[in-house]
Length: 83
View 1 (cartoon, helix red, strand yellow):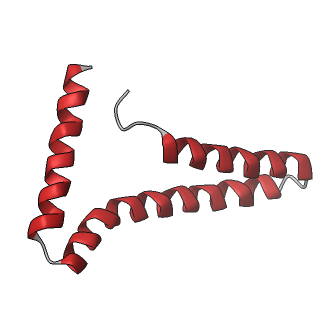
View 2 (cartoon, rainbow, N blue to C red):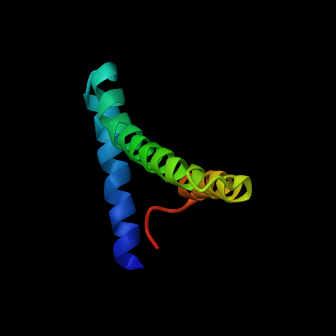
């Protein structure tokens, strides 16, 4: 737990340094790229999964996959970065 708190503190300091010392467009890109890439990977996975579940021709299973993706995205958005 102590390691997690130290990691968060260092990350917060690094992000602060980026926002203070870098030009704004470069800082925004540097901070946003990992989030955007993560979202794109999740989206590609969901589209692939939805396609193959759709081949089963069962709307209940397709609805369950769509709901599960939504729940997964909400949990991913609110979860802490360390366990």
